[in-house]
Length: 593
Image (tube, rainbow, N blue to C red; front, side, top):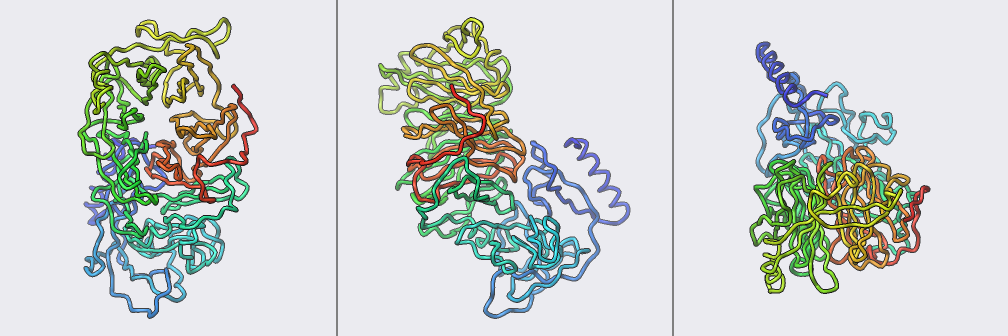
């Protein structure tokens, strides 16, 4: 793999070579090679559907006749092509009024508006004339290969659009593809066209016969984002992608219809997240950006689970990784930034500016935050440090901070206090159980729980993850004891990352994100210590982050960090995730604590 710097040098040399030869290169981003650093050259370039990508200069192809666009939806009266038009930029193009013709260029073949009738066979030799599908359905072309006729395309297929945006799902609201009625999808030459998002609507009615069985994938149910990246879902689970890095967010009106786009494009590297109540029974999904610069951003939902706004709530920070909520309803965001990261308090509604807290004693590579209120109503706050030698920190508010905590505005509770650090005291010959002690940093032993990441508290128990050792630690905060167990179980075979759970969930499920690369998913653990899988990001090569649940518990949210897509999931029986789960299919390898 070529590094960013060497690739840029190579690219400049090739550009100069083409310039000497009289040809103007066109930058095209590779879809199968991307790096975790912004390559700004890829933004606004044809062929780049990855916000994080690697651009390769190629000579501009010679002018070619404009191919006819493939059919999309039946039109009452087919109309002649208005002439050549430039296809909008795939990932960050501004929305263009259809009444304003775009300038023509030899390197961008014409794209006529969708028309009815059978589609022509695209010229395989034309770069932009090939039917671009995630997978051919096996008609006139081979499955998985570029399509040779419109009837092969099970998803998006548009002449002149080198991305091939498409949506294909089992959502009954998604119009069927004209070539294969059983394969649902809708084509559009402009990715900002609302018609693409029709595939991303959620059902307005539910089927109580579709029982939710987490861990069971017998139905083979899949959901797709608009670029064709697939998520395998447990039986009885539905889902849609609702936000994409580098693109404006599709907004909806009170009827669930598309109503325009956000002012800002969605942030890069979405990471830790949480849900907070919003006006009119809606909610805020607060999401970190693990970039540099980073920040924190809010997706606002109405009471029906539709996005109505997107806006920043904290800027000027770096590599915002995980975080956690406070008892008074603010979001704490942690900078995972080497030795210079800090921990900030933010307002989910964006009405109050961010403020650095005092919950950590020095700069670090901080990951996640949690709190515990003891039987005397005294609060303690915990922060993990994602490093080999960074101990788990406990913050205890001092008298000034407690006066703030007992007032109406509790924001200043985290401004002053003391710090101590976790020391594990294993039982003789058994590192999987023992006592704990909170004391000075010099006595802490993070070597026993290195690279601590996700953390949460349920009742009087603190749960946290040691990512590299793939261990779940459960700390009894009252009796000062801990136990340790493996998270490796069945499909959950990669490094655990963030934790999530629903307060007062009778199912008592602890949810795990996974730093899994091409095998990234969401897994659950019940109160008996048995593991099961809920979904698997088969179309992504990344980590899952940002798991959270809506205020009414009807929706689960998740991020696939790179290329950066937020998903919304629901039970197809219409029930909340806290309602009864009559059956769970567990991993073959059962872990019991």
